[in-house]
Length: 305
Ligand code: RIB
Image (cartoon, rainbow, N blue to C red):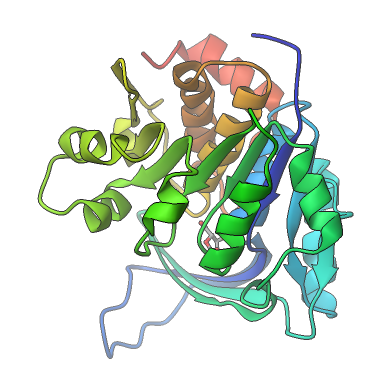
């Protein structure tokens, strides 16, 4: 593990998650009684920033927009508590983003996002662009406007990596794909990009257009598809409580390990262990493990192969 760390900048969304625990995910037109409701810090971008910061020392900045409201205070406290730098976060006249989440007894979820201030990140300020230009690894997802994601990728310095987590699913223009060094997708997002193929074959198709593809496969681990090799990384077996944010933890930790000098497969191994630990706990940012917890899980339970 190299100790020379470069900066991670995560460009993306921050939401307050309103989470209802339900026996199962409701169908269309169905009303279900929840057993509890809780509010917590979430949003794919903010979750990934927390994942990167908790991974152990890669200085991490979050670039995004929050409302001028109490929800923003909740998010700031969570991000700052994890060690994320917030000087490139701007205040929007729109309310802080909200996610309405149902989590079933088997830990699955269904999420509706109300973009608010995230949707208002229609451009990057000079401060935000400057911060992006300091990064060794720039990370983005798709809960903020696509032109902003492209602008962030293009603002990175030569040699810096751009990691795109293409979630939630959206058509990806070639102009954006050309910028991507590492594309992280789950099976559903990959199938939306390349329908009708098994994950490895689908990822190979995308590989012509991006540097590498990581396909997260839930309890089956992940697939790291690079030009020269394909590697299956197994998942740690865990008791599932809540899968919300596990993919974000994976992405954040992967980015931090890339910034620390690991190769993509090794970074994915760290991400996979961290993501597995995150599903054992409720919530999104609250569930992100520390570096020490991830290290211990790797030592105790063995390396994911
Ligand atoms: O990926 C999980 C996240 O998606 C939640 O925290 C929610 O806010 C939505 O952005």
